[in-house]
Image (cartoon, one colour):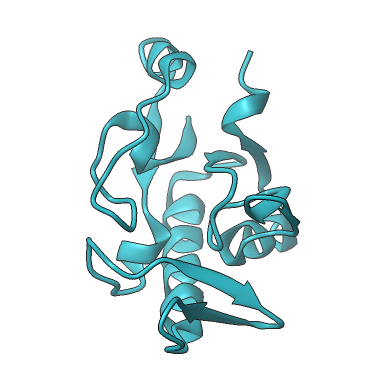
Amino acid sequence: MKLCSACFLGVRCLWNRASRPNKKILELSKKEILIPICPEQLGGLSTPREPCKIVGNKVITRSGKDVTDNYNRGAEEALRIAKFYGITEAILKQGSPSCGCATTEPLKRGEGVTVKLFRQNGIKVISQGQIK
């Protein structure tokens, strides 16, 4: 059993109300239980919503609004779900300020808010590109 970015399973939860169904992850879901999460929604942000990026230690919308509290709350709720189910691994979306495990946006290295919290709590995080 693993947590998985909900957008990979067809849930329309991305900032622009899109999803990113991932063929390998959909195949994996036939063999293993994948629990869908969207930390941004868990943190109280709407869908659709403004795109965001990490600036220093804050998460800021395109128009300049600070949504760091929403991202932190979403990460905490995702961690609560992981602990409830005894999850030790998550598959999260690369390029997200919440779920990015090597980049938080195109060409910007770093960890997303949820990834950082998961790793601090011993949860292994992989991106969609690491699925075999």
